[in-house]
Image (cartoon, rainbow, N blue to C red):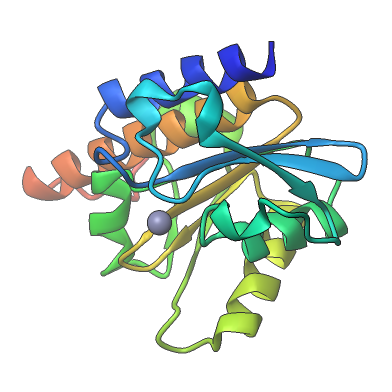
Length: 189
Ligand SMILES: [Zn+2]
């Protein structure tokens, strides 16, 4: 059951080009436990051995095998009501993160989902600050972007966090195309 959720979302992200073969990570919270993808998991073809069970606050025997982003996932679970997290590298969103301070979607779906998506800069923030800032941003926003890196989306279900990730990428692709056409992306449609 848990495995099939990870497999479906991982395949979805990979086939849409939102992660490369071994990038991105997924997790869900179950009480004081969390299941997170193994370091270097291929999200497009997740198998049972790719999931690591560990604690929200405590380490277990297999904790060292978990994704290197585990501290961010833990911080989000410790301080928000999220039950699922998707970290991906959506290319249009990452491209815009280099030049924007925040993403303001202009498409109907994006506008309904996000009033804005903050862009955090890890060149400016130290590692522990970055963790805290991501967590703080996700208290108010469904998804946050790290400049030049990727997105963190949080929800109750993995499918929900995946949806926010795909919707953000769609909004960013459209913004990118509008910029290319010389259309003022600030105008309403
Ligand atoms: Zn990443």
